[in-house]
Image 1 (cartoon, rainbow, N blue to C red):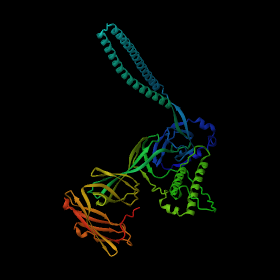
Image 2: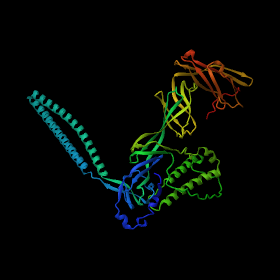
Image 3: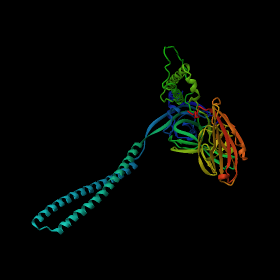
Image 4: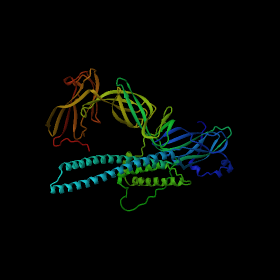
Length: 595
């Protein structure tokens, strides 16, 4: 909206009262309070927070009026509220409040109570049936004892009725089996009913707790002039909102460029849904403090002994710098909600920043370790960028990550196959492309698709505008590489040991189409004062298919661009053979100098 100007922030709210408005006290009381939630117009998502802008349409009346902005989210940062009005609309004050609100849940509670009563009645029935089973078991035990005693007496007197005894025994056994089955079924039923009772009780407790919820609101006092546009904007920060970059790369290989889709993976649980909003993504840090920290003096004196240093010694320097960075960030979002405490809160952070700087400067004065650690200082926060998403976006409040496309960037470059047989037999497809867009591409995960098929994942570092980057396009299953030592000769020449080694690098092509493969191998990286390394034969003459050859002595890397014909398999594979010679003191042996 053109012409909108900032009027007041939350820090000014507590310095203003209705009696200081230079308006008769009865005027605000006579005016009706206008309650409105407004509409979320735009959202700027930072790393950890989001700045929300609501558009409020004023009632059709002039003069001083009180507005009640309702339905603020539960993650609102109370000290961040500020408002701005159109020309002719003066915002006198902004105040945030929380108040309990009761809900009518009598109908739901009554239904749950009826459900709970029925479940308890069912549990009582089960328990009574289980008691009857126990009584029946006791009766069977008494019957068994009576039968056994009677049988012994009849047997003693010679009048035992075997048939009757057998029938009684079978009856007792059958009854016990039936009681056991019924008891087990009742036990399972009792367990299920108890779970249902527990679940219903939890629902009632939750409903009872939710019967009173917290309403979060903003109270604005505004003065609208005659003929002024009746709109204003309310801005506030919310927590529990963040985003991370991610990418999808799509390539057809036969094309001279690839398509890069740039996404933002957003997670927001602020408590309010963002529907049809203008969205901006930023890596900046929202700041509620407008002035720089206060720099205090650093008193230094002499004392005997070695420097005391910092906790953890020189290794503690990165942690100390990280603590300084965290304190600086915390200062930027300091937002006390109690009147008159803003300066005290900021002064406390300023004191902490000066204390941390004291420790770092003392290390600079007493040790060279600070200079050595500057290169790895964690104060480097990378690029600070802002992306405005075209059109409008809808993003509900929920824990799941949600993808929003930032841009689609076509990237032209050099596509090639690369083989490094000293490391792997696989041959990979890569593209060396340049970021020709007007966007800085932040570091993030990359999912790659070639010819519509997923081939793997990788990760980008930050890519500046105009910067080149290598994109992996997966394994080419039609190509295989191999490296073998085909000859080794060793001899002693004077005081030196001379070793000549011949390697064969071969590329097989299982497809019908010829292709060019970039083949890399490496030479030992040596100290020429101790070891003499000579490339006797660079392999260029060994195969007419070599179209290019490079040697990067600083890295010890050899590169050949080798043309591989179609169906070059086994003995027909394209081959590079090269020979190197190493000379060194014969009393010494070669070893790796890797730490």
